[in-house]
Image (cartoon, rainbow, N blue to C red; front, top):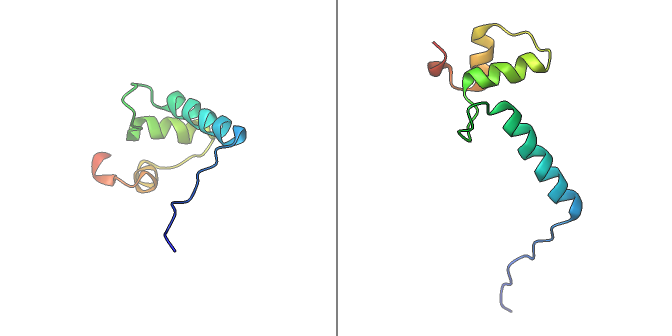
Length: 68
């Protein structure tokens, strides 16, 4: 018996979800680099109505050495 690679099924829903995610990402990637930096991440947190200190934001972002 030979191993066959799994078939990938792409539904219209999956395609729409991917498009929505990309659109949302572009909203927060203000400089268009393809990355969300800590300043842009702060904007995301603020837009969601979450109030965090700078240290909390950096910890959540996961790159605290870029924050100071």
